[in-house]
Image (cartoon, rainbow, N blue to C red):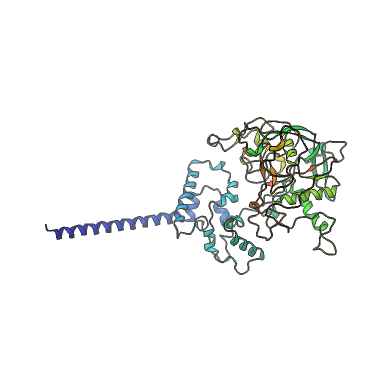
Length: 520
């Protein structure tokens, strides 16, 4: 055969192979598209993929299902990027694998679904690109002034916030709003009346009744004494700012039995409206009165309920002003606890990681072995609401036991403000001498926060564990300029409890609200 026929046959074979390749590729694409389409329907998400027990029902009740125009927003339109890019397929594979694994290998009845609704989780399966695809005009006709402020802030802060910072529950209806929540009743009230008299004799536990109300504050008498503050280097999960261990001596004081509740804080919110404004000029502040918070930008209780649950989302500055107001209306000296006072009462005489027996290594989820076999919860779960039992929300105090000195939720439920400025090296200068009633550094940028919360790992519930406010990070969503000095927009697990001094003068309370926040 001549070379020409050979070349022609070779070219024909090449063309044939190319054609077959194109047909196979086309078939794969069609099959792949058919597979993607089949696994992207609402029915498939509900029946074959999703493990969540009420995802479909809460979606049907949401504004994205019953829109004014009659348009139904489907699952993939919120929970996947637009299908025009590669990220649509990579995210579909990632989220699909998670759902399939959960449905195949996990006990669905033991999954904490409430925690999956938190902002931190929501950011992993909702996408701004999906939101903006439908809401291309962020300043549509009829948008409220609040909405305009919020969307302007979003445009300026896209590197730090997402759509779900403000619209977390837009796609799934989650029940009653905060103002509709039912107040819980503390069933221990009658028993406490017997042990916390309203007219105490001498230094003992007593009940403070806020003047002009029926709200009671239970104050526990804390005897003065000495203790070793901080954690030794041998303590599991100990951090460098918890040492060196040093000696501290404290004078007697009273500390509130529980964190300040909404029931207490709302008296202040109502009182400040009449006490901080002049009758003749409602916009001016009375020079001799303690001012109070402006209305919050959102729902400060997150819809979880108020009543005896701990008050949250107020700033450290607002908490100090509450203490000043309480001092004014009672004639006694109330303030935030110092860091030393807080640890002293949390330990209740113990020198171990907790005020009960047990190692953080047994309780923490940070050890892969514990995650595999299950973490030990008792007795910690009886004393604190934390990551393992907290259901991602605050709780009334009646559900936990008091520590040996009669204080409830010192380790969990919400973290708590202290009076001190935070300094990671605050303990370094202490040496061998015994510090008497220390109040921390004379200045700083952020304040100390102590204890764990409903979202904390057990390792962070140790008596010596230290943390601090993060003013900038806790104000990301607030669109106001200047930002509020009264409310954090992005911190839902910090509250406080009050201390009452004996007779010594109260230390000066800083009037600056903190780093990055200006007065409003």
